[in-house]
Image (tube, rainbow, N blue to C red; front, top):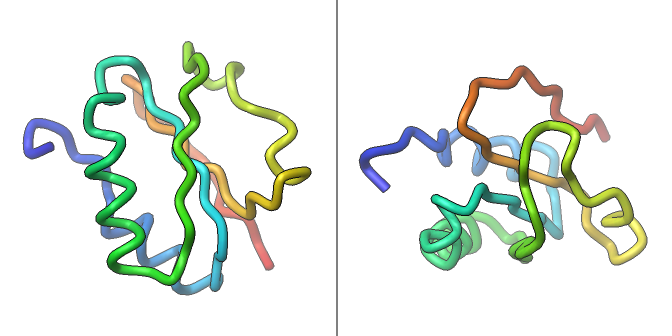
Length: 90
């Protein structure tokens, strides 16, 4: 993963700060082979359960909308372009 800066430290810090219990990660196809590694790192450094979204990810408009119905507290979506986001407030 060294070829990409996924800001995992920032993700982990926010999960801890907000006491997130269940996270869904969404990755573009090029990063999907690293999904398990990302999942394990987040789970090791937090108390969160991490689910991997295996559906499509073609940009900011292509994200799963029903995650709260299955108990997901936070969606972390990575893409190929920088995108400004706002973390969920408790």
